[in-house]
Image (cartoon, rainbow, N blue to C red; front, side, top):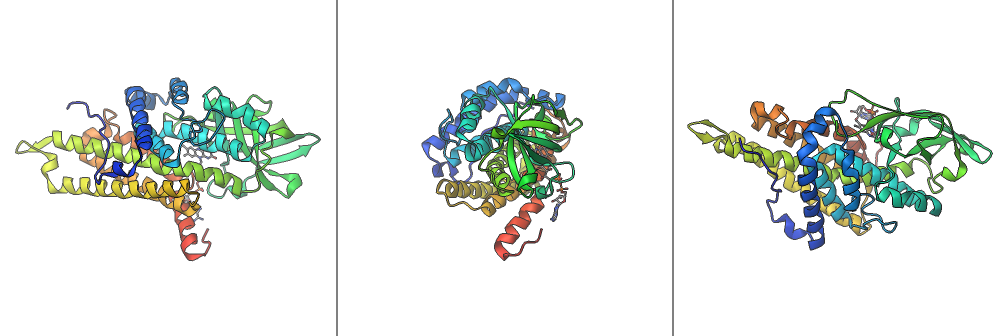
Length: 393
Ligand SMILES: Cc1cc2nc3c(=O)[nH]c(=O)nc-3n(C[C@H](O)[C@H](O)[C@H](O)COP(=O)(O)OP(=O)(O)OC[C@H]3O[C@@H](n4cnc5c(N)ncnc54)[C@H](O)[C@@H]3O)c2cc1C
């Protein structure tokens, strides 16, 4: 079977809805992924290795903090940013996760809630990929309900002392700085964000091994035991649980586009395979109605998902997006991508379970994507709350 190369997916002249600049960002990212990630990703996935060698080239293309303005950032529009994450995740969800964390979960909170000094210190080197970050919200006992967190910050003179455990933290062991969310004892346990340099005494990060998903991404547990930080490391504009939720909104938006990329990779691979693979009367399996039905389901759902994220992106550019819009895009597109991965795997038969093809890797990755940044069901509750006005958490 000849090698299958991604060709993009456009059923309804979707490209005509994009500007020249948006198409340029997408095509540049697609070419970068094709030339630099596709040749190594299966080896990385097998070895459980994050391709750190791509950090500098990704920084040079402006991928980090891409939608922020100033500090060397690219200042992309939200649709450009979305198309970039789509192409990154067409390569691999783990690499897209790394970029989402660096941009939406570390640079964004520094940009949004940080002091001028914090912005000057961290944003330029993070944009260049010289400093890496991680985002510590989830704890061993609190995931969907982060408000239950046990991590505490105690004010002592001109310092804060942090104690707690964080779990499932992307990039934890490769980060130079961690955005740590903690309850501040002197402020009635209000949740606030802190910048914690990872070389501070009492800070420890360990990788989580044995993941069957996002194997090309680093996932870690963090331990903070009497970690002293100067009071200037508090992100001054953080104000309760809504602050980390604002960060998650940024990252979820990128995930909604990213999952679309994974779905497109699976669909296009299955389509090409079905035209090459012959089984009965020397005819390709694509000639059977049941195979065509699966391809039809996928191209229809991908097309609907493209329109959904494009509209959410346009609303975001206009400053009119609501968090429930982003929840719908994340929930729908990740579910749709997982279904596409399963159908595509099926179309490839036994070949579908081997890493000669990208489908099983995307499927396993998408299981994490379905869970993180608000599980599928938590987003059901957010949308349900929005349409009924009733909180069902
Ligand atoms: C690979 C990976 C990387 C991650 N990276 C990060 C990171 O960088 N930073 C970070 O802070 N976190 C990160 N996470 C953690 C992730 O955000 C959490 O796993 C997620 O929020 C879910 O929490 P949980 O795993 O504790 O599941 P739980 O909250 O225990 O949920 C378990 C199940 O119960 C359901 N459930 C929970 N509450 C309700 C309810 N009210 N009604 C109905 N059903 C409910 C859920 O939908 C789910 O099906 C990562 C996770 C993974 C897998």
